[in-house]
Length: 97
Image 1 (cartoon, rainbow, N blue to C red):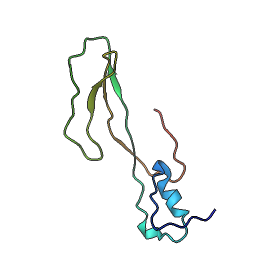
Image 2 (cartoon, rainbow, N blue to C red; image 1 turned 90 degrees about the vertical axis):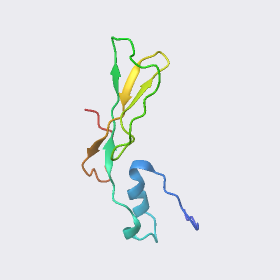
Image 3 (cartoon, rainbow, N blue to C red; image 1 turned 90 degrees about the horizontal axis):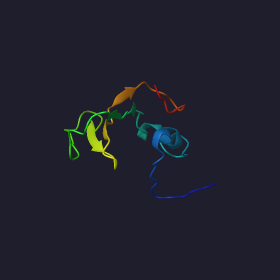
């Protein structure tokens, strides 16, 4: 397939760099380095919620900070936190530990 465009927006998420490298005519020096992170959510259970509204923290490096949210049943969730991951190359998989 041949695609001719004045501008291409690469919104391929985790695979953006590998997709960008596959585009002919795009200089490798214009492709930013990958930085991988993951976030986990934690729940508060067994107690009545100490909060009645959402809590938004001050942003931190690499994220918006750990939020406090409530689902429709009133369950409290904290997150996401930010855990920076090593360079995973083009073989990115979802890791659950």
